[in-house]
Length: 176
Ligand code: NI
Image (cartoon, rainbow, N blue to C red):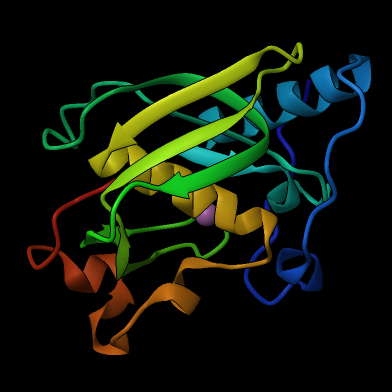
């Protein structure tokens, strides 16, 4: 296990469509171990394999209850492989996001409010969940990384994009 460097916006690999995982083997387990250590070291809410330079369809996410983010409900630690998302309804909501690949910045991003997501866990077992709100937002953000999309590309108004320290007091605080 190792903390790996996180690629930053501008790296070509972050703009690529990642390949599906074919085997649920020790190599996948080692990748997920590195992703987990890296996410925890950087206090991230989620991480996608391309962010550490591996172009495979693997994301992880977790929100533990944190007094710094009292409005953010907890999300159990999840490894999601080869995810498929289905928006439930048309409703979207705006929320502030950050990203370990876009350090120091925050932006207001529209996301579907309700979502069904399916995929596999690290051993290949099926995951099938219906979620809403911040949980749905985190999953949409992470799965976008697998399609080469970073959150600024989803924004509708770049006036709602800025540095976290400059925005303090204007935005609802959320984890990266
Ligand atoms: Ni991100």
